[in-house]
Image 1 (cartoon, rainbow, N blue to C red):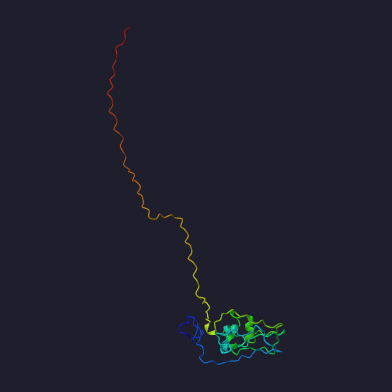
Image 2 (cartoon, rainbow, N blue to C red):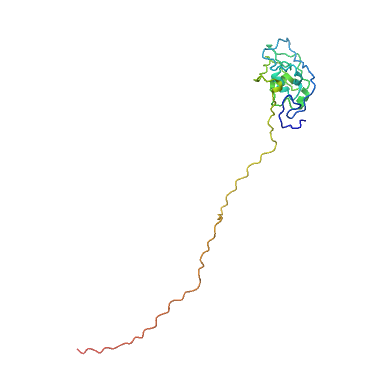
Length: 217
């Protein structure tokens, strides 16, 4: 594997994101096109969009670059559709010898490939052998600049974390008991239980009765 799988490297480098190193020697491989009856000429939209497609046709069968080569080098990869009014294959076969391995790796159920690509490459292995009333639509090329095959970078797909995101902590329920915070308790005054004596009573008055003399008038 690559020493730094998180990095994105140039197509001209030895290895790329998350894949095995590219083969150093070019082993041209010719993919047999799906037989047609009759076989008309390919439509005008099916062509190579890069000058290095024919030279790099061996990458059509490389797992790391298969999707890229199908998009930009359709003619060199022999996956062009034809302008026949009725598409009738003589036998439902796979167009690629690696289809059984791709199926084992989840090619048929992967959402990264369209149904048209699955039928075009691995119709038999994916169980998509049906008779078509119309020809398959040509691949829609992506807009590219004047960069060559060596100037295109492969951007890795974002990695989806497999850990479960924890739920937020529940909000604590407020207690019905109010507890003062940082409040200095005030000491209530102590009520004295001592009985205050009543004031002293006045001394009794010495009353003398004075008898006035009677009036003789």
